[in-house]
Length: 125
Length: 321
Image 1 (cartoon, rainbow over the protein chains, first blue to last red):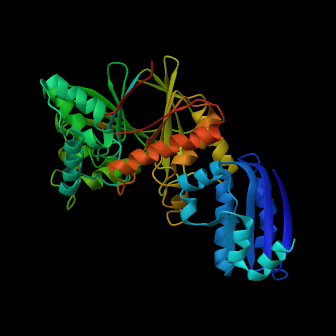
Image 2 (image 1 turned 180 degrees about the horizontal axis):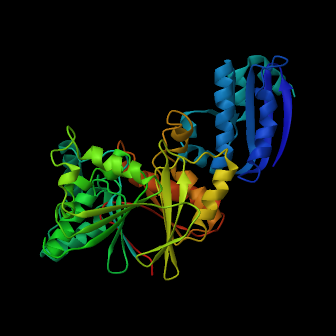
Image 3 (image 1 turned 60 degrees about the horizontal axis):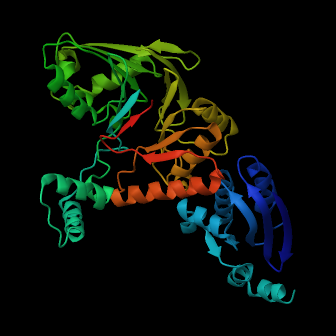
């Protein structure tokens, strides 16, 4: 699993590539965890997970997403995911995560939904 | 070894409502529209070939009770409401005059896992012997059954039973030889505690693991479950909830998920994963959908590994041979 993080206006955009299963779920959690910590400097109010490069995910990875979603909800922050590959979208549907997470077809649409300023900056490259 | 399911529903028995039956009849009539059946055999063949399983049979509504057929003494998991029908069968087979010996392995004493015993005729017949095994202390096992058959819960009290009933506590760090089975048990996460069982006999391995909430963040629990399931021919597993329900609104309710079962069984090299302890709110169509989705999930995450997946129904039989 590989990851990269960008800050675009008031959105933290986290891109995940590769596989998230029982072997890599901890690493996935470590990528997301710093952005859920609201005890230090104020974190950006919105998180978008770009899962366009995610090719494999099991229940271990879904659990990490749920931890993130619960933490954001408790802090009054927004969290969404975007750009699911077809097999990952199926897993979200089977696990009913499509009913509890905000899912956007593309990163552009996810940013537009979360922040018009971030969407403009994204489009400007 | 043959596994026969007498009860497969979670939490509380359910029965099809009149409205549900009417919908099933309407579906069957639609499917049969314009057809003629010359013989009863023609009709039976049509039912089997052309009427979907949720319409022609359904998954049943009795709570947990599973018989393991091997050897000459009766061996069962749990005493849910399905035990009533098992009792009817053994009474029809043996009548009241031929004493029998029964061995019950109890996951835990929640109501839906013991409620069948007062309706199990052999307990009222002197000469029968009933061994009850569990991971809980004997005093806790006894208390649960005594309470169930005491005022004001039931009119026939525990001390009025005719059979000899023997309670046995099993420990998790030992292997027991009972009825020709090599038996181990494991602690599970559930309110009040529950225990899973691993039975081995003749080179075949059966695991019964219900009423267990698998905490995905607990690596030790995951490793222990994978080790307990290792290379089993059949794992009967608590698949009561969707994963989203299990980690949100139903967190800490003590049950697991269909997809967690897939992940554990694939890692453990299990040959057959059987979904069990169905959510009472699920109708037959929903249970079939859950099965199809679970198979699809296994296809995606299995990456070519082969595993049979079924969903339990009352009267289902699985041969391990």
